[in-house]
Length: 479
Image (cartoon, rainbow, N blue to C red; front, side, top):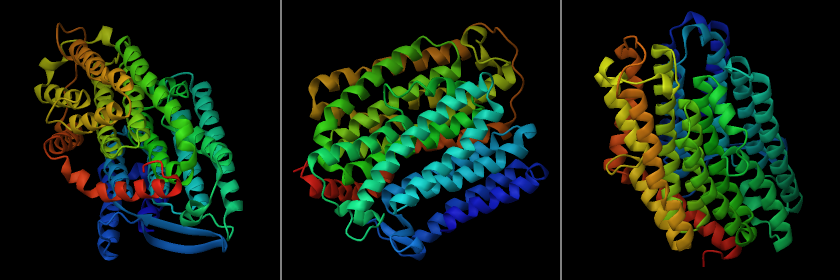
């Protein structure tokens, strides 16, 4: 509970005193949530056994609706990602935006923690919706252009998806023995094939929009591009992980009977998204738009890996969720620095920036290599595992998904070349070391995970085994 209350309390303080306190202090206070998570885990003596341990349970307004929170290796990794990236995103705020953005980011941090910890279906939905409120205002207040049109489109897409998920949850609630939203009760509901297809459709629609999976992506590029840097980081680095998390934690175990129906559809759409996003990214001139389409390509591979229902595909997908969050936030942070110091983020107007700051150029290159999944960077282990899982599921899908290796290298190296190498087309203001240390932290994570991915895999593997067992028990799709 402390993991949610702390950032929520800080959000209230920031609304009152945000502009009067240095953002470094707010970032440090936000990072305390990570310490709270570690404390909760150690205080409850939670073992790495794959069990989703309950950390807080209190009846709300009826016996069937509880405020229930839990943690396991999978949830813990998502909390780790959220509470590493939130302070870094806070640090990226410009002084003139600090007063309004700080409370919204901290509120969203609390809501995201709630999404990943909720063990009650209604609480999961409530936190899911709460996370939408601050990002809506972040995008609306500071979008660069077409703010209202872009933000409303994003809001409508995600809100309709949320209602579809709520309809599925209510149907399951009515089918439980004790009329409860508890995860265990929902998991125990026996659905026939037709019921499962409709219930699964509600979950899948909500998650496919949030991820997004092709063709539910039309809101993404404009929202990522026109949102302020902090909004783009939150959306791509953490918020889209809500959809991927929901697939594995809620949809697959609860509506497992429908997986055989949706599996070929989702894998096909995901592979299309991998190629489509990468090809469109190659043609982009705007750096933020390029990263938006590259994100569509990367998360398509994760979704495809999950739906292979192979152990290596699911393990690789969870690892890549964390990796993608680190890399995409680093990329958007780099673009923010470039736009602030060079006055442009258009590739046609950049070039030769490497000679102005060698440290920044080296950091940028490592992030690019990590995103392109070069061996001994964080992107390689997860991408290798995902491609192996897709190949094991279907060779043709694996071949097309494997094109991401070439296409990603093309658009990422093009991005680096046109912005950092060649002749200078613009001046570049000096970058202070204070601006670079968050990137240095992210680069360190990129290298550590690339060298030793088992630091993460060892923690999440028991959870993967438990989730796969739940799916298998529901329908036997893994048997």
